[in-house]
Length: 120
Image (cartoon, rainbow, N blue to C red):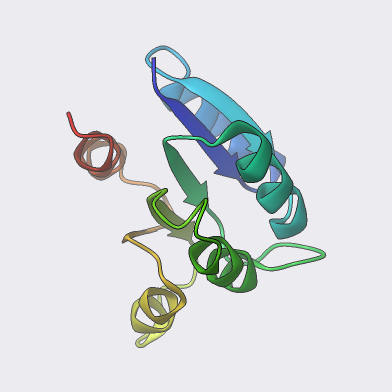
């Protein structure tokens, strides 16, 4: 079973992702970017779902740091964010993300992107 780290500070959004993914994946949770870095370093998940608007350290910076760490850089990061303005995806890709989903979450797109990045 593949491990996914969900980085989301809004409980409702986090619960939705858990409900959608818990049956087929082992899930880890983080509520901010700093916690995400700690969990990623400790657990080495197979995939990270990263919100961008987070307390303490935002998802932009957390992704830059993940991708700068040779031990973690290989982990795919899919942004799941309400940042849907023109240029947001390009800015996120410049931080090193591997894929981008906007909120509200399209379940079929989520499943497709997760499967693709987990090699299924």
